[in-house]
Length: 393
Ligand SMILES: Cc1cc2nc3c(=O)[nH]c(=O)nc-3n(C[C@H](O)[C@H](O)[C@H](O)COP(=O)(O)OP(=O)(O)OC[C@H]3O[C@@H](n4cnc5c(N)ncnc54)[C@H](O)[C@@H]3O)c2cc1C
Image 1: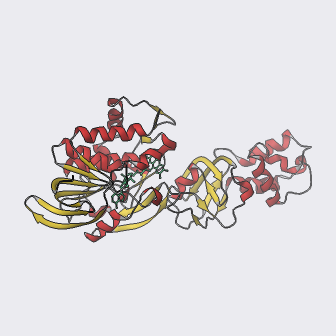
Image 2 (image 1 turned 90 degrees about the horizontal axis):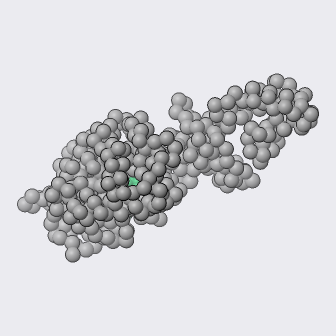
Image 3 (image 1 turned 90 degrees about the vertical axis):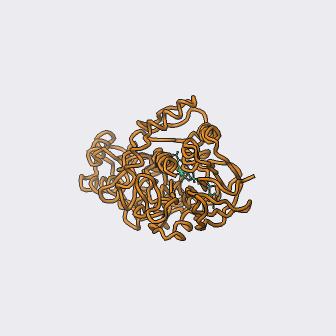
């Protein structure tokens, strides 16, 4: 049975909501945690390929996108990656560092959900799911300010934590509830869009699907060197997912030989196999299927490699290291790892995540206009913002 009144109602039992509920409960607040899904933490369960990349040790504010780049600093400093790691270790969850700073579970993302559930249970949080929340309204009672209306009855409470996440992966239960409720209470919304998402283009060559290589994808000064994968509809891979968060119809510069001088590499290839076909200068520099495609596109002259003039090598080098890629769109929320944009941080207190003009209303996690890079940053924001709100609600 759900109580008809309590101190704090946390709506959304994902990463941020479970953290917020555990913290509020630990402070002795009578806390109720609700979710419309039949189980908590579904995105945690599928994250990091089932092993949950639960944080990144360098979670500085520069690794996050937001209209106010400084907003996240306070919450991130109040609950750091080391704090979360200490919690993970207290629960004896085995973990490893995959790339520098990027931490994953050794066994399963289930360990993280079980840990958060254990924290909530120990703090006396009343967990209820599946519960569908229809609306939050203002209702001043004795010690209460809000009324949360659900399909299992209504609850009066002093604080509401909106932790229903963003719009990515609707088939896992993502909704616009947080955005809608924030708007209803007069908070601003920064335009939302799919982020950490594969890009599409009408000219994608399906015959290249599956070809992968290291590349650098950049827009202006911001760039990411990492894996790139050709898909049936365009491009994916970590370098593309990262740059997708910054993409707004701009051209993307692709360097398929990151960190190398393409012209020098081509000259070396020419001297190594002077009697081979011209296209052989590309072999070994990029995967064979891509090399064949580029050779066709560049219409290399019918000469041996040794007879290719520097002028032609420069053209090939340009194509390899400074290709202007113009995506037509993205794969959308169905394939996005996160949503960018969201509840405007100008309307929130940076220390507590409480709405400036609506005392008692807190907004946390992905619903807020703070979007992390790929690599564990989004969870760190969820833990840190959940912690901040849970300590204040
Ligand atoms: C495939 C995939 C892999 C990812 N891997 C990583 C990773 O390894 N590392 C990383 O840092 N980030 C990763 N992310 C991003 C990360 O999962 C999210 O940023 C994070 O879960 C956001 O936390 P949140 O608590 O704000 O929202 P969520 O975790 O999405 O939780 C929101 C909760 O609210 C519930 N809810 C929604 N609407 C309602 C409603 N109307 N009523 C009641 N409940 C509702 C949902 O059921 C859900 O339980 C990944 C995302 C995806 C999609």
